Length: 212
Image 1 (spheres, rainbow, N blue to C red):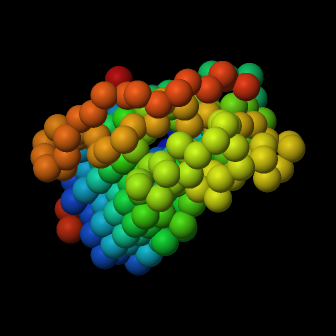
Image 2: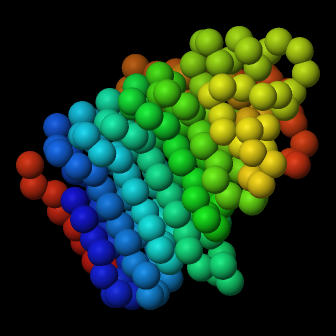
């Protein structure tokens, strides 16, 4: 499912099932206008490319999607150095992708909260100069066990950030959860948990509805 244009419309991409494709699942690009698409409640499984990718002057809301067993999970790139690349990436299940779970490029500044990000080759790769707010997520048993050993933040293989390249910002994984997140209407077997971890200092056919 691809939307690539110079339109000023804000796409709403919701309720789609995109599986076993030879390429990306959802790709939204706009090189000319700042747009705010909503990518919500999609199931994207078994595609060879990236599950969800945004590029250009795109400031999305990415919420309540299941992105599983793809080549890569979610990649977000915001290219306007003078714009505002802040947006929410919340309540998603990003599971068992062959490469990264989330990759952040250029001037994108997602707020990554209350996601299940487990079983990927890497959880979050930060290729920006900004610190990434990735608080209050479930990272899986193995990564969580490492977080709970000793002081934080620390250099963990699950993250690519300033520990690996001094040109990039930190991935702030504070407030990690101790079990899976509840994703309403997406993964109903999950249970919500209380956040007790320490806080770090901030250092088929698919439908597209266009509005606006």
